[in-house]
Image (cartoon, rainbow, N blue to C red; front, side, top):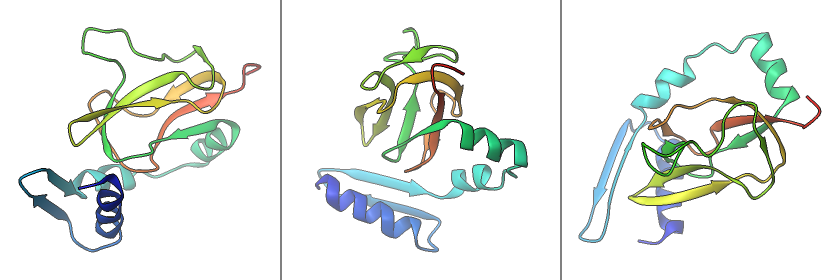
Length: 136
């Protein structure tokens, strides 16, 4: 199954009332669940969070998958709070369907906050990292 079809399946699933979906063929297996989403979507966003997100650039997940901050559990993280990054720097890995996808920054600046934990399931368009300009 190609990536476009998988993306369409995920979009349909996200817009449906279905809570769990599992598809399997001889070539692939995909399992989707909205149960983890409810934990994060129930978080109340206060005014301070809104102001913080307006001040910083958000780096969002381009795919659904598992977030990893480093190449391996024993490797140092790609980025840490307070570090400067350049556009094109690898900031994390997101594993989707047993494929490790290096996620690269499209902005330069200073890492202000990392909003996800290593090994956490992330959703498409979920904010992963907040970046400030180098003058912050």
